[in-house]
Amino acid sequence: MPKHFRTIDAARRNLSAIENSAIDELLAGRIGRREFLRHGSVLGLSLPFLCGIASAVGLGAPQARAEGKPGGTVRAGVAVPGGAIDPVTFYDSGSYQLVFQTAEFLCVTQPDLTLKPVLAESWSPNADGSVWTFKLRKGVKFHNGEDFKADDVVATFDRLSDPKGTSNALSVFKGLLSKGGTRKVDDHTVEFHLDAPNGSFPYSVSIDNYNAVILPASYKGDYEKTFEGTGPFRLESYTPKVGASFVRNPDYWGKKALPDRLEFKFYADVQPRILALQAGEVDVLDAIPLDVSQVVLSNPDITVLRVASTAHRQLHMRCDMAPFTDKRVRQALALSIDRSKLVDGLCRGMAATGNDSPLAPAFPATDKSVPQRAQDVARAKQLMEAAGLANGFDMTLTTLRYSDIPGYAQLFQNFAKEVGARISLNIEDQDKYYGKAVFGQSDWLDSPLGITDYAHRSVPNVFLKSPLVSDGPWNAAHFKNTTYDGLVTGYLKALDLDAQRKAASDIQKLLLDETPVIFSYFPDLLVPVRKNVSGLPPIAAGLLLDRVSVG
Image (cartoon, rainbow, N blue to C red; front, side, top):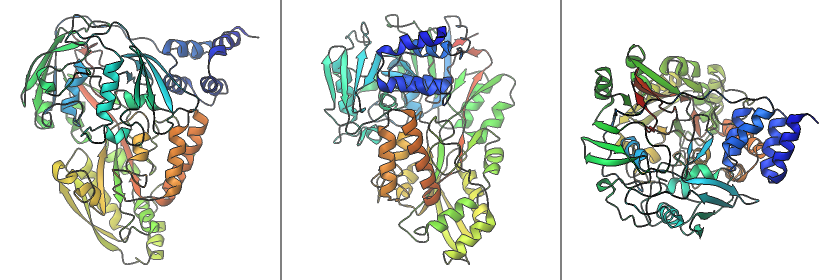
């Protein structure tokens, strides 16, 4: 037996059948190093262990980056937080960019979508993925001096999953984790008893779910007064609508932060943020929209980090309202779109092409053999005629004024005109578009035709459920299909990649046929920094500044 097979054989003797199936996938060549590390990390296998297995089969690790020098102040320009900052309820980038510096998650996603343990040291599922056990890190203290323990984890997730509360994380936890499902085993062990089996649950308690920062069990609100957490920085000052500053936490449990201090400046719009970066008033911005990217891409003093993302724009068609009750009309509109013009023109090549499914190319389970839908105006006209709409129809598309969306809406208007659909545009401010974000009180959820922005996720679970299952809280298409609902249930509970891939393939094919929502492109995330800035991890979830160095 070759040496590397002996090494692998010895390593896998203590693994479960599901854990061993990941190694089988690697050895059979069905997945590469990146997918192996990602899937193994979800199951709770340590990254050093996984890297060792990958190395044993000749898939070596990428070269580590050099650490920057300690000291100095990092200045960041971000959007004005959308109201009082509370990790339980916030939903906006300006708020969570600040909280990420002071509070921490059980685990965080890495650039390759693997999961890195943070306040959890390890985790593992039971046989069917209905119970996940997390071992918590010892020796961690909150900024107020309290010890971090299981009680804090239980209290945090009971807050977030309470159906009577106002948690923004209910969009993740509804049908997945109920209040009372998080249970203390001992001071450093918790069990998550799920409402239904889930094969990628750790992402739901990671930075992917940005409300899931761990707060003390004693938390009662007024977060802005303390920015309490276990993180590498502590609050120095906070002034609403102006800015905030943080200083290195000398008692941090892990590697001490490189910067002595962080300064955040708030800006009401993206243009002033870009001007501040160009003038050297700030060192880094949160992500910028594609439509203003050219301003910084051509600046020799600025580097733009491009991060492949699963963010997208959902173009929904209400399946319960004519003419969209007929799937041939929905298919015709999808066939009218020239996706290459969207990717190469609107997005300047900084996007992946969509295939009318939330299963983006970046997701390992996505079946890339499913034929890509392309523009076919002749076929679209045939479908319109077959649906009794040879003379077309009139419709208003309602959407929000954000990033590249107005440009997308105008291009779609032109594409649809070629197949007889006369689309007028109603472009609103974000507050008016989203309304109360409930059916009957939201232009987003009530409009017959609309485009909505969806932020990046490392797994497609939220994308598959909330906007597309029959009872989904974000089902703007009012799409109801029991076959689809069953396929999503199968995908979510699958612990092994083969089962995930099969379910994903069936989902992709069903959505191409039904076409309740058009997914045309997945734009990259663009994060601009000054040339003298190094060490910012290129992750789509947000800014983590503790390893950043300013030269």
